[in-house]
Length: 307
Ligand SMILES: [Zn+2]
Image 1: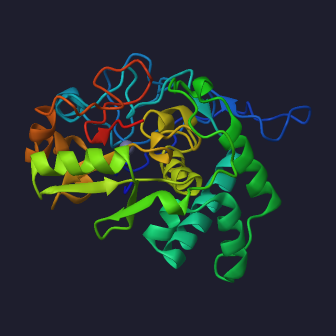
Image 2: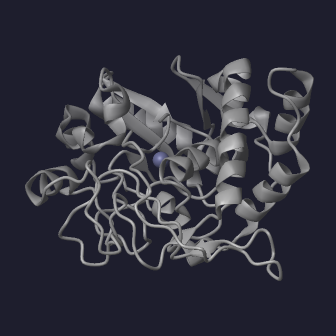
């Protein structure tokens, strides 16, 4: 998933809002459901459950013809490009926190480089952020938000795969790593590395490792990237990106792509690539998120299941 398992669809304007915000007798952290609808990406006028609240679809809504071209083979039962009435949404206050955190993590990534950032634990991230004036320490509110985001049950967001990482303090064991390629990606030695090498032998040198091991910080960053782009719609973001504690990239899975495709490797463009065609012919390669899976996650033909 940019270096993330996402396409780079842009956020659409908020088209509906509600005053159903956290009241004084509710926790500040209460997440709104069905309120402050933020729509990201593309939407279809044919989606019966899409919340337009009777309003005209945003200007970036695509027609059914173009949507069918885009979505073919890359949709979960609920489209990752659409918002639904029962989606869980951040409050406006928490969306501001998410946005600030995303920016702080981005600054940290720029400071440390992709390789180190991919493997960073939260304790390391906190220490590193405090060391650099231009990044600055996580605030107490940001830390509380991160903890809540990490420990919340993703099933509430429609993400039905199992929790993979138990603790926010999880760290990647540096002694088990093998660096692959020049993009700062790593694999665990043993089964993940052996599987990647076998695939590379069978597919050829045009095959790249586009995303390997991701620590909790990296997964949180790409998840927040999507959450912010979705205007705070956690459910919608979770249809594209695993929530921070739920990514199998933490324990061995990896993404592959074709050299030269760039971010296209995380979109339907990949489906037409030679690497994807070759991959599909390899009986020993299994997708973690298969087509029409019942996990609430979109089809990811680039994501190789290891664990
Ligand atoms: Zn992946």
